[in-house]
Image (cartoon, rainbow, N blue to C red):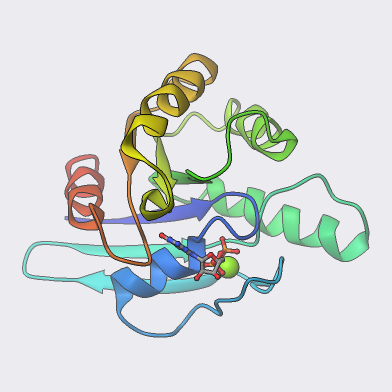
Length: 167
Ligand code: GDP
Ligand code: MG
């Protein structure tokens, strides 16, 4: 099996960390500064039965300046080229961040399977997860909802299985 997967989400949710964990190389620049990843960065995951190209996008957000506008365009073009979209959010931040609704509005017109990836579960109590899942579920028909810790690697294998099932 093979396919293309885009990772989108607001800056700092952990897109580059996830990609580096999966690919196992420092190919995407990780930083706690917003917008470090200025261009599309691709990484290929391969094993015996699959080859998955991950595309780490600059965060989609309401553009505030020319360069921001350019980066948003790169991210949106990417979505039209892939098979599956991982929409990553931060478990540590509740629903209602303006940027997330903006991204989900953009996703409505793409018509591709979207996984909600709730990252940084190492930072929250398990009881906090269910309400967050319920809130997001009401807002968008996600194909899958998968809590992970990209930093510690929790549940990342499960996410990889689900991605593979949808290719
Ligand atoms: P991006 O802007 O979405 O690419 O986010 P980065 O991958 O650059 O990560 C932003 C910050 O969040 C970095 O300081 C990461 O170490 C941190 N981070 C990413 N994933 C996790 C996680 O699962 N748990 C915790 N505690 N921190 C994380
Ligand atoms: Mg990044």
